[in-house]
Amino acid sequence: MTIDWQHFTPGSALIGGVLIGLATTVLLLANGRVAGVSGILGGLLRPARGDMAWRGAFLLGLFVAPLVWLTAGVMPPGQIDHSVRMLALAGLLVGIGTRFGSGCTSGHGVCGIARWSPRSLAATACFLVAGAVTVFVTRHVVH
Image 1 (tube, rainbow, N blue to C red):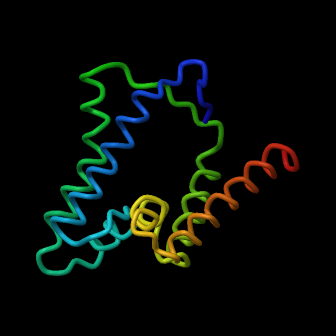
Image 2 (tube, helix red, strand yellow; image 1 turned 135 degrees about the vertical axis):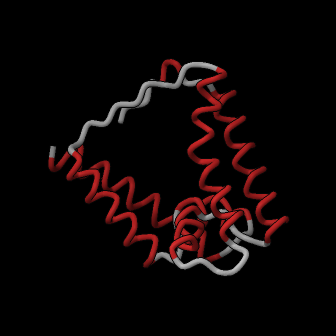
């Protein structure tokens, strides 16, 4: 995937960040739950009484939001430069990482850091370092 930095609009990025912060705040205040996508999805796989509606609504919103964006404007073009097998491997590794890290980037990086959770601060630092190392290796070593 490539980013078109020449057409980057900080305004839309700011609005998106505010909406993510608002959504996570509402979920925390209304349900006492952290907005970690992997945990929300995992909870649907082993449902607890009374959890299905809010989990389903949250995940449905992840799919509906791009459709709403389409009504307001044109979606930015997406480009995937890897094979389906490589994407599946990446998804598997992310899934394993969320289990070992007790959460995903949204849970730790957005909600955990906002709550000053030491575990989330450490996890997010590991995510960033692992991402930087991965980019370096794939672009300069393996290429």
